[in-house]
Length: 131
Image (cartoon, rainbow, N blue to C red; front, side, top):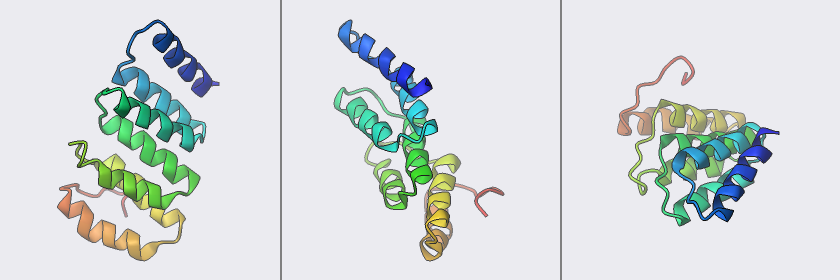
């Protein structure tokens, strides 16, 4: 499967003493997200940061989406909150994934608060998916 191949590629790079870049990590995190391997996606993201590889919105969005798919709304919210510490601006994809995670968990008050308070604070304009 795609996520196994991505992990194999990261392992081979590490064994060759090469430092995988954010494209390699993003590919692996995204593959784990698509395969519903949310824990592994978060572990890879942590390894990315530990190795001082620059995370970006793609990395964060993949982690948020992995948490959303797994029904871990609290981790999705936590992850979008930590983006500012990494100096990464959440975008519409980030916000819609959090809104979806909250919706799936029947956390409508939290979703409404996020929509009304956090989207404007983050300067993110909602789209049809946001509603």
